[in-house]
Structures are given as C-alpha cells and as structure tokens.
Image (cartoon, rainbow, N blue to C red):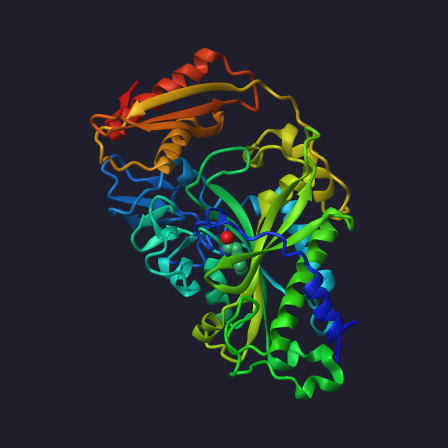
Length: 476
Ligand code: PHE
C-alpha cells in the first residue's frame, strides 16, 4: 500500500521512531483543556456600536462588542480585560502576530490545495470571542465538574457567556456548518499567573481537518478499496480510539504530525530540534504536544518549549456534529509563543506595545507585495531596570476563600503594563488562629523609561489598599 510517498510500513516505522520521551506530570496538564450571542458576527473590528465598558458602579450590566450583558454572580471581567476584548492584533497588518499568521496561512495554502489550486483550509479570523459554556466546554466533551470551568480560571460575562479560553470553542460550530478543513485565528482569555510569557489575553490558531473514507485512503492506490476507516471490534487503547481501524489511527497520526512538523520546519528552519510528548485533552485521543528546543540566551542548558497541543478528534464529538462517518485531527497553537521564539521577542507584553520603535521592526515584510519570509529579529530598544517590591498580608479568617488569580487581576488592573511579574514567594499558616499569611513579589518595570522607586511605591500602595478593601486582608 502506498501513502503518498511512503509505504504503509514506512509510515508505521516513522510512527515508532518518533520520540515519546516524556509523560506529562498531571500538574503540567494545561488546567483548562487537558488542562479553558453568542453572536458570531459582532466580532469583526468594524461594527462596535458602543465602547466596551462595565456599566457604572452598581455594574448590573456590561457592554461588550456592542451588546449589553446582564451581570450575575459569575461576572468577573475587569476593566482592563474589557479594554482588550476584540483587539484583533492578528488582523493588524504590520503587527508581528499578523506577520506570523500570514506566514502560517501562506504555508498551508502552498501545501494543501483542492482542485485548481484552491486552498484546502478555510481561514476564519473574525469570530466573536464571546461564547457560551456550551461552545467552550460541553461541545468539546469537557465534563460539567471540570476545574477549567471555575470562575477562578475563566472570564465570565455572566453564567451564560464567557470569553473563549481557546479557539477550540468554535470547532463544532464550523464542522456543523460543513467545513472539512479550517484554521481559526483569534484572541483567547485565561486568568493566569503573570510573567514574561503569560498574559491573560493571547492569540491562538486552531487547525482542524476531517476526512471521508475515500479522502483518508486516497494515497493508498491499489489497496484503497480494501481499507476500512472503522473497525468496530477495536477497543480504546493509549494509541487509538474505539472503533477506529489500525490504518485510520496510524494514518491520521502520521498526517497530523507531518503537517505540524512541516509547519515547524518551514517557520524555524529545517534544523529545528523537536519532540512529541503524549498529552491529554478531553476532545482528542490520542493527544500530543509538540516541543521545540531553544537555547537559553544566557548560554545555559537548552530548554524544551511546548509549542502546541493536538490530537485525533474524539469520534463522539464528530458524531455530535452529525459526522459519524468522518475522522480527523485538530491542533491549537499559541501565536505569541511562536512569535516570541521566531522573532526573539523577550516579553509577551511587547505585543501590546504601540511604540513605533517596536512595531517598525516588523514593518518591512508586512508591506503589500513584500517577501513575508524575510528574516526579522527583534532588537531590544533599551532595557530599563526592574523594581521588585513585596506585599505580605494575613487573610481575614482561617477559612477565608482567596484565589491568587484574583490577586493577579487586581494587580494588573491597577498597575497595568508596569507589572512584569507577580509571584507568590511565601505562605504559611498561623499556628494559633489558623489564618494564612501570603507574600507576593511584584516586579515593576516599564518598557519605556526607568521607573523611580517612588512611582513604583505609589502603585504598590494602591494595590495594598485595594486588597484591604476587597478581601479585608491585614497588611503585615
Ligand atoms: N485547545 C487546546 C488548548 O488551548 C489545544 C488543542 C487544540 C488541543 C486542538 C488539541 C486539539 O490547550
């Protein structure tokens, strides 16, 4: 049997040679998805009737993407996040995320075509980030009690609407609409720690491709007729889903991995070192993460960086979309991560910079008609010194409920882009009254100037004051 240029045996061999070097410890599983109006049309930059805002102090409702939403006990959007909703950085020509998106799409269009060289993958880049729990979780088989649904991890407008935590939220809608190969690009939102590579708003690209039996075995030539996509006698194992034939499992895995390896090589060069790590997502099985090796700038040991999650689409998901006789694969990648690696951008906050000195560095390849692939390496404009300060406080009672993500949001809504990192550096329980004491280190740093310690102190004091008002903590 011939699979494109590979025999079936070669294909099997390739699979077994791949590196499955590391199992993910549970704590590293992305909490959300292995570990995140419903309208689909208010998303584009054009039609925002009213600016996004929390509607006054009583905040009974909020305006987002030109629509009003009632608040309830789940509402946890902050003004800063609201300002960033629907930012569309990936749609701004000249922005590094635009450049990266266009390189990826260019690669797919050049390598995957239908008849008469029409692109195989449909690109969808303007869906509203406001989705329902059904879209973000249920349609993807994420269990009702899954931790990723907690308001401590997700930005809820109210119980019925949230800011998508991943572009996978659109998989089922697009499959139901009849698309069989698509790329979704969009802004996603997660309540998370703060550091150089985490920001509560970032961008993802989702890729999905599904196959009919004929399409899947099209490369198999003579034996295509004898091959079957499904084999009801087969059970679920670590390597495959129940009911998938061996050929289906192997072929889908091969197609998926070679697609993503091709993409990584096209973007990072053919000598890039990568490895596949088994992973878990509720909506794919088997699942993997692709890690890419990058050398530390300080000359330290080389590190593996997780670049994307992917897998074979759960058959139950496809059945639910009315596609019981299709199989397929999906992947999701974080655009900032790829862009940081590709263009040597050292801090995720830089993607939000309006500083012309930053943006100008990406302008050349983004000109209409220019070569998108001309190399770009970011050169720091200048590095201003950091200003670290600690904040310690007692929670009001032994059973006080307090989540660090709430604190991170508070810090960010007060300090904005001046905060580089917040980490919990110490915690302990009072031996007598059982209260918890927490100590956070907040690193302030501006990308535009040297912060004086008085400036940082003013912001720091404001944070302390707000924490007292909000949680009745006692500053130590
Ligand atoms: N949505 C997953 C995440 O954000 C990534 C993913 C997409 C994994 C598609 C598998 C398939 O973590």
